[in-house]
Image 1 (cartoon, one colour):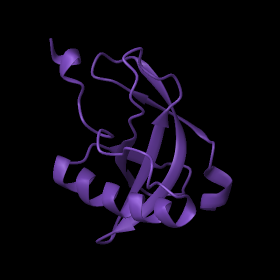
Image 2: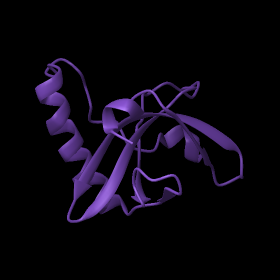
Image 3: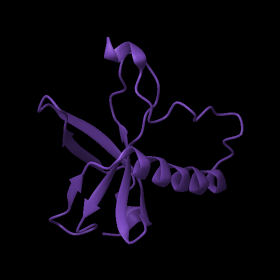
Image 4: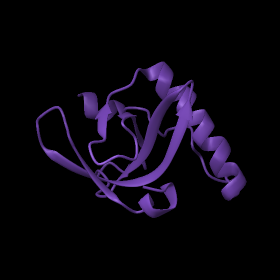
Length: 109
C-alpha cells in the first residue's frame, strides 16, 4: 500500500489497560533499515497537548503488518526525522513542538 493512500487511515492499538485507541496515520519513516509509523490519536485527551505516537512496523505495507513499541531513544531519533520532513511541508517556526511525545506530569499523579 502506497504511503499516500495511507494518510488519514485509522489504526487501532491497545493501551496498557487493553482499551482500543484509534489513531490517524500521519507518516512512515524508514531509518537504519527499520520501518516506523507516526500516528496521531483521533480523540485527544482532555488535558490537551497534541501528542504523536511512533511505533515500529513489521511487514510494513503488507496485510499482516504488526506494530511494536520502541525505546525513547528510537522515538527521539525518528521524531527528529519526522520534524525535518514536516519543516519542508509546513512552516513550524511558530509552533511549539517541544512537548510532543512527553508525558504530562499531571497524568502520573
